[in-house]
Length: 356
Ligand code: GDP
Image 1 (spheres, rainbow, N blue to C red):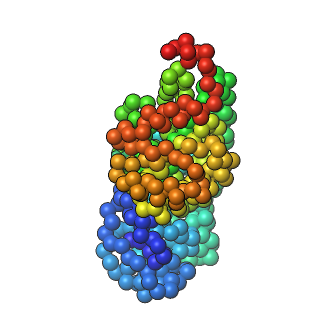
Image 2 (cartoon, rainbow, N blue to C red):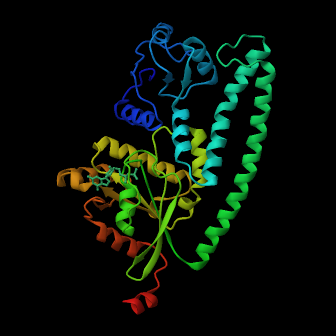
Image 3 (cartoon, rainbow, N blue to C red):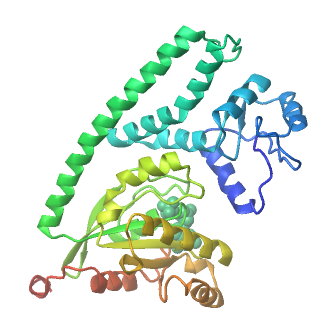
């Protein structure tokens, strides 16, 4: 179930529904709230009552819910109520492989649940019957304390891992191998492009967040070696809680010599410009200026020459050029390699001519 009406949701709703499915749910029905919503319930009270009588297991809200809204809806529906943040956490949880990303997710999850448990605790202290969650004040209090302790343990462990990684990056820098990182929105074709650049067959499953950990391979460009790294993609309305967790692991991006920003050319022009704008802004926030970004227009096999021209005009504000490629057919891949050869710093001429 998805909640109130938001203008221009079209594309985003589709993306959200696919996230809900990737998280392991089957969507029974999409409910739209047209009238005014009651902020305590997220939905209008009439709509909430109507939903309460329907047949479903979990109510999923498109937006982020406040702890009070979750509390109120769960009590009304007598079923589990989750929101966008939780859906993304579920997906991350499934995909996490390394200890670090497991810890990051556990931390995000605890921080997400903490205010909710606090709300339950507050209610329990007031002597309220909590029905759904069942537990009494003592149990909730113990759980709350456990969460707080666990959060500080995880923070400490993550700090250690981060120090270790910083060392690792420093060593690589000392060796002088430049690093190029792939980024872009989910489904733009990052994994496919990665594979075609390094001639590998890393699983492309076309679903959001196939890539949670960063994944690196060396690439030899006519004697010039670079390290190419695939990263988790951007996603619309990523909850701040997760931005913090994930962008902190993206030290790799921050330190990279060049960023390949993969753009899905098959999307409508407005989508393309919106996504490029968000990407440029997000990268800017972590200190990456446009001069370090190499824009790559992917999926050109699906679009006309006119569309490429329109995209070029549409993106002029952000970039005066981009490399058109098709990661799928291989079109433009050699040109992209040439751009990398020219743009990535650290070219060792003597070594290259010795190799050729
Ligand atoms: P990621 O989420 O950015 O890693 O994207 P993927 O590499 O998983 O690709 C998402 C979907 O787009 C997959 O179904 C790919 O087969 C498809 N795709 C990727 N590159 C191209 C391309 O150049 N042309 C076409 N037509 N499809 C592509």
